[in-house]
Image 1 (cartoon, rainbow, N blue to C red):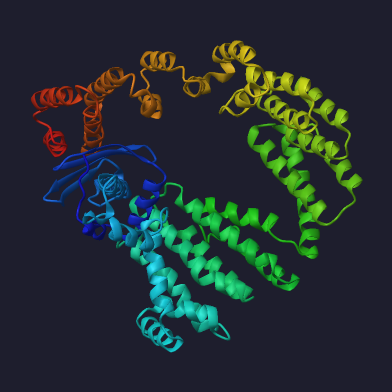
Image 2: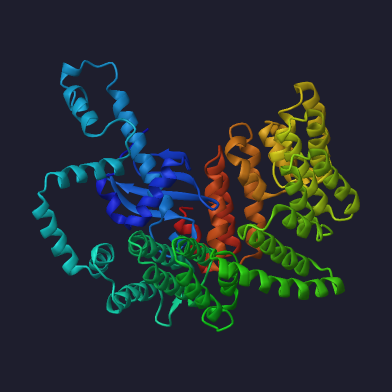
Length: 590
């Protein structure tokens, strides 16, 4: 059954949320869509699976609920928007299907000329948003140049952001006053997303960083394109300092913003003169250790200072600096070969080798320097790669095979040697050696994914694969990917049996979509047991909401509604002194 909400539901969402929801819908993240005249429910794949319920009355949305954290704060979220887009599409498909086989001239309101006109207005395969953008373009194309300029002037007069953007793109010069105005735009972004104390909560962190990145692309990029590199550098640094000083309940967004600043620094430096690079380089030197950003953000500054500049004077200075650093690190490494000291030494050695290459030092000198440090597995691999490029394949492979023996106690190093050998053999079409090394990698080295297992399967016969698959499933090195392999091989009986044995809800949710058709009752009962166990150990509203979400999951399965009602009723009796829990049960419709 299809049921269509009135079109004005889009007005309930912020533009950015609506756009993200549309992307989720296009990505096929909405599934198990259930529709009636009074309710729509679905599951949406986000950072995890979220349950969405939309209450309807007379074609209007009465209430929406999603068990994601963003909606928990009373916001309309992208998962709800995705479900509404899916609902609109389903309704559209049903209406189109009802017209099939009818005479276009019969007067049906959705067929014939009306249908042809719709196709002309919105070609097949063009999204709704794209169609709206195209309509806007058509309107603008009918305006005269004077009309456009007058309208743009009026808009910019009332919008400082737009006014500054126009100035960045078309002013003959960008003076200090204009730079200050643009920095004020950055400050406004901070003010918009922070509370009275200047703290940015997690549900604003993503938008905060996204807006700063938007500033870089919309306001700084035009300066780079116009060759105003010093001004662009100043503003990019201001954005980085802003991000690096922000008090944010962060979930990875800060790193995303810092990475984007590094990308912009790279664009700026690539077009800068030696003198400009020197001034920019000195800025990085001044910031490090100055306390201008949080300690962990200084790593970005130091990394770019050591790798982001290309002028010969800076490269030569870097070479000299690295020699002193590496000398000290070698002394420390001899005293204590812990992982941190090893990684730091390898990083700086790689920087030193890269700098030699950038300075066009002769290849044999670079190779000789690299060979001195082949006692380190990562440098041995780099040395073997350099030898391989000289076409001395046997020597390169021999170095790595010897490394496997020498560092046999270092499992990560052995795995890295093996992976490199696989690429060597694949590049030379050495089939026997490739098969042997793939088998070694899969059965003896820890596997994080199915990459090498899939490569092995593709070069052996079906009969050989059947035998090998069982060996892999029993291998300790492949324990972390056993479930993925069973799923890929459609060994669903074995997969369900092992999930039930381990009791892992995380694993169940990962494969639920494919297991559900044949194992509905097993999944339902496992969710029910999980909810019963969880309720014993939770004590606040957020946790209650999370547990109750599993009751809603159960209702999607045959017999699940009665089971969930029974569990909810038992909780009401057993935990009647927990009003927050009772409230969450009620809000979930039980």
